[in-house]
Amino acid sequence: MTETAPTEPSGPTGPATHAAHAEPTNSASPPIPATAPPASYTPKVSTDILGEPWVARRIDVALNEAAAPNADHAVLVHQRGAAPAAGTQAAPRHERAVLYLHGRNDYFFQTHLADAFLQAGYEFYALDLRTCGRAGIGHPSPHDVRDLRIHDEEISEALRIIRSEHGHDVVVLNGHSTGGLQAVIWAADHPGTVEALVLNSPWLQLNASGLIRSYGSAYVDVLSRRSPERIIDNPAEAKARKRLAAEAASAPGPDGAEAGGSEPVEADLYVRVLHRRWGGEWDWDLRLKPSPAFPVRAGFLAGIRRLQREVRHGLGIEAPVLVCCSTTSSGPEASPEEALHSDIVLSVDQIIERAAFLGTDVTVRQIPGGVHDLALSPSPAREEYLATVTDWLDEHLG
Image: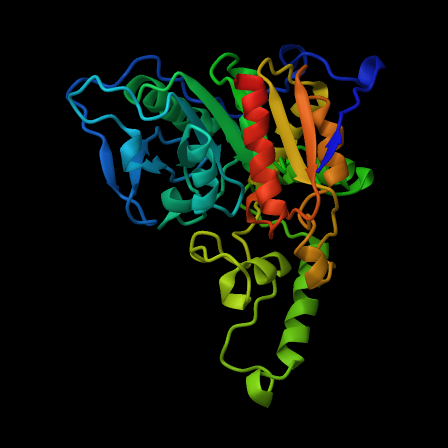
């Protein structure tokens, strides 16, 4: 494990307070619920797609066609034993809890991550945000959210359930990739609502050159106002997909069969090295985390860039923050071996640089051999990441 202390630039370009520099957004977040639902309210809970002991609880949200078209609910996932028996005053089995926020083109399926937190004494909750994962089933454009602050409503309700209904005193916000960006914006906007943040390869900066970030962002901002649904493709990723598809199509099939057999070719390198269907270790639902990924639309990317600029201005998060990432980035042109031991989605250098702008108590830990989702890394990187997180929580929360 490599530990890096984030450096803090000085002068007018260095971190400042979030309130002083936050950029206005075009769509306001819905009001945060301040009170519990009426006593007659019955939660909509059912057995989750993961099967027992996992349950899924629907969280209804207000429609906002400007920020998240056609989205009316999110889904909170937890084990059945997390909730005290109805009608009792029993204490929860764990006083502390973790709320996990997934990345783009993702959903919660990493039950081994939950196991690690449970063994460390933290109840585990995961929130599939509106339009995403379980909450995106049947949605015409999954993950098409144009202002991440629209998710404040379901995050607030999830925290209310965790604290008020289930009785947890301490809550840690755990975010991966886009979920990491979501987590830091929430913590900056709502100080005191969580006791700590654990970030897994957070998307704090666009993985591109400064020139592309500057001029590309300006173009996307204009396009998002005219055609927010326009699909934005990454040229480097598109080129890599074509190359991988061509290589796979020309390779001989099993037992010397002709190329181009009936088995679909996987052209996304990240999926090819991780998913069990193509020889990887993990078996997630390709309908909820598909390949190719759900398209990136102009409205979504413009919203991401607005929040990333807020990070650059400094967030001033009061809670302690752990930022974890790999030691190496490779990119979409990486070999399969490189892709299995590095981050091919984001730049780890950019993650480390932006960590300095999050708050006053930030720890950066790099995991050798880690992939973009560190929880899906091969051994021993996966175990090192999980141990790093639980050890850090012990140090900071006791």
